[in-house]
Image 1 (cartoon, rainbow, N blue to C red):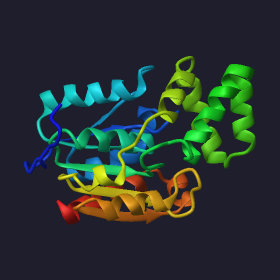
Image 2 (cartoon, rainbow, N blue to C red):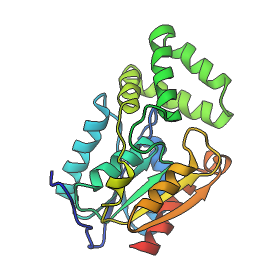
Image 3 (tube, rainbow, N blue to C red):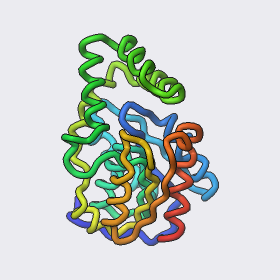
Length: 236
């Protein structure tokens, strides 16, 4: 891949979106699908493979070769992977929902949670791990992760481990982004700290930031996509 990439100024027809850690394409459809439909974009929602990060990057390369100008995006680590790809490839924009960390993941709450889940899966198995997660989570999150974790098992542990080691773009790298960056950040979610989204927005040359509460996006995942879409329209 080239060291830097320019913004693709052509009108995009497709958005490729990547799920967060332990999530899947079903959630991406609910988070980004309504906004994509409203804008007349074809949504390609990626399913995680065991080779999590490299698998998503390969998929973006393949789709870009075939589909023309793209918006790329995702939720949580999916947003970071999409941003990493956009730093090296022309694209029409990045839709980043709930970015979880910048640079080194060592102290990030989301990475810590992923590592803890990996350990629980190895020690206790899937169903006890789901039960423990559900006991300490809001009902909507317990239902969402119970569904996706069962669907992703037995590859779930490897995916979580890979995610917890992913070095997200740092602020100096984000400052070189030529594509517009539209972010929807959470104001009160400890796993996806709002300051991460605000820092990304401040670093990027062209950015827009929408903020939502944990309850808002928990009740209606589509607010994530709409926040990004409206921001992107204002800066494209």
